Length: 330
Image (cartoon, rainbow, N blue to C red; front, side, top):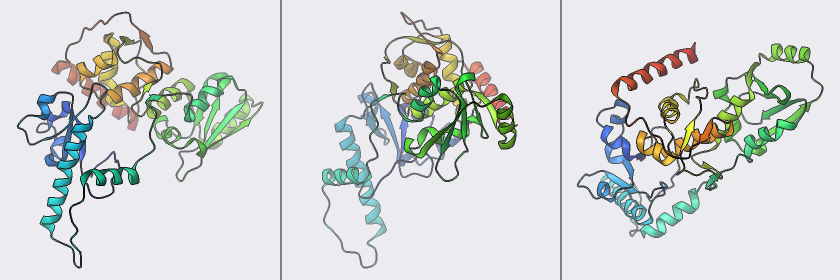
């Protein structure tokens, strides 16, 4: 641990933080087999898993998936020892001076101070960021032109609130940078009194395609939530999905199982995670997006029909995902 650290979302990485549900599948799935087992850390809510005789590294979390302090200290000590062992095996560098062992508490504190990312609020507020701009645009007139001022920008977004549509040269899933970038990097201009003919001419000149504004809001909230539950929502109250959103997007096709379960059952978000094994943060992102566009209904009591997806249904979902992939790349 005696180095600068940062979070990454793709391989290669020094360590991989994985949900407990993947532990049993490490030797079964090719993408998991490729991960170095001694560099995988599994999160668990059960003391028995972490105290087992297994050589695996465990990080104990509470019911909200927040790591326990004692477990973090034990894990940091383990990783620090692992890192120091690697250095000793490699031998000292040419001209290097051996230094005495560093206190692990001070080392962790120093690394945290140097590499800490901005802390996100515990709850997701749709009034912030680009989502807040879109929600505030509902009562505006004219054509709103949003531009993201970064290199390789996905292009402008033309929002026409009166018709509840937007136009873009890029497909919906390529607009994710608008929702993950700093709000200060997004500029907005308004073009008043735009006629249908002018809009058609603009669409043809810039190769714009129309989409529903509802779909932009759904996808935007999904990308902006970052694992935070919508403010005012209760993860312990039963809810049901009224109907599926459009999941024909490159980074949303893994949500098929989640959508199917939530439409067939009235259950709390915590219950969804327990029944499906899907990470709670992903469930929050999906729920937030569906709630914003009115696809969620509250239930007075839980009503669970599906216990586990049988192999035939899993195969069916695989076929659906394959067809969506083909339609998306066509």
